[in-house]
Image (cartoon, rainbow, N blue to C red; front, top):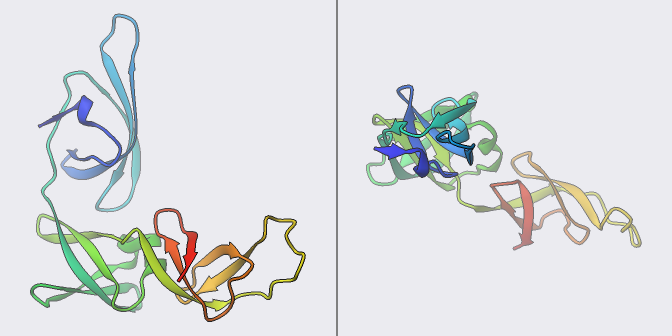
Length: 185
């Protein structure tokens, strides 16, 4: 069992019979009263966020989450298809489950799939992914008033600000946590 001192960013807890991940946590103690932890929790199953306050003495279970390495195969309509690397079983996740992470997926990308009660519920991307630039406006010499960046479009449709030297056909590395340019590959 976890208590309020364990509620750190990234901790996964069982709350209201569903798995949640702590995305924000602030511990406070006011006068003679007990400690209070203000948290923002993200539902792992559907992505909904909620803010909750917990007091000293509250206990939480750990969710039965498993993680497996899987290979992203393709997208068909509203479904993303994956294959388990160990058993070679194929399964699909709905577009609303994958969410914004779908903008980083290209064929044969290895991802971690989170399982809750033996059902695939969410994906975890690698921290950095290499994507090819398909549209890049030409850079104009001396055009550095805005910091020397331009917006390019990647093969998945994702748009990223990059330095002026990046051109069409280049492969760049993108940080999946914030969607920012990391480096040219």
